[in-house]
Image 1 (cartoon, helix red, strand yellow):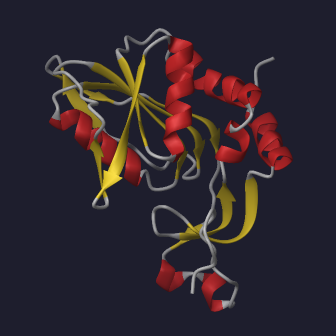
Image 2 (cartoon, one colour):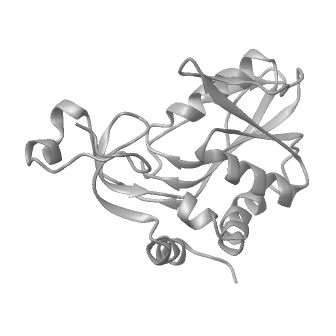
Length: 203
């Protein structure tokens, strides 16, 4: 059975992964909706099916390595790489900056697929793009589960074989989820408690 967007959102609801309230996003923005993908990806069956949509989309693409930003993207990258039978690595934060550690590296010209769980502004993915470009590897696509921007985030392009090419992007779910800058947040003005999922309440 091939999942569609409605079915995926139903899985998020069933798993308790679609949260409603007042949340601090990784981007620093605030929102009334939060996708806790780990609550879905903890179930191998769901992980295989949802990440399978990403691997199916890129199955005909020449890929050497799948890379993801820690922490949220690691499970997505690992499962997509498993299904494509490719190497899987991740970038993690050191002094607030994403970098490759643990002996991970990329060779010049290596073809790389970037994976992530949720994209709002795409900040972590843009950081991974910089890592890949700085090492001289070639980005062949970006795949992620939830696109909160409803397609507004464009991860750009690179010059490959002398031709400027847009990165192919694919998400399993697109929706226009509202988010606010902290100084314009209507939820803050309404006095609704701000929470960063996975942590304690923020004062």
